[in-house]
Image (cartoon, rainbow, N blue to C red; front, side):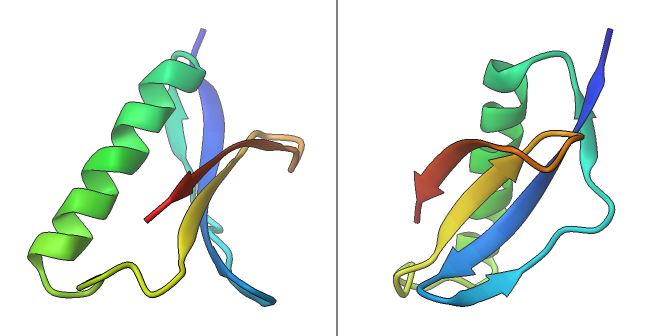
Length: 70
């Protein structure tokens, strides 16, 4: 059964919270979705070199499930 996950952008003490989230079957599926989002943002020039940002994947309860450096 799909669950809701959230992609927050985090750098040092700066956080851009994802309020909408996405549905995914499991953590592996949502990690692939996050990687695609990062690639799309890089292609659009929004994340030219990562700038110290990472994507934090949260679950429905708000717990951090995975952190992906950009």
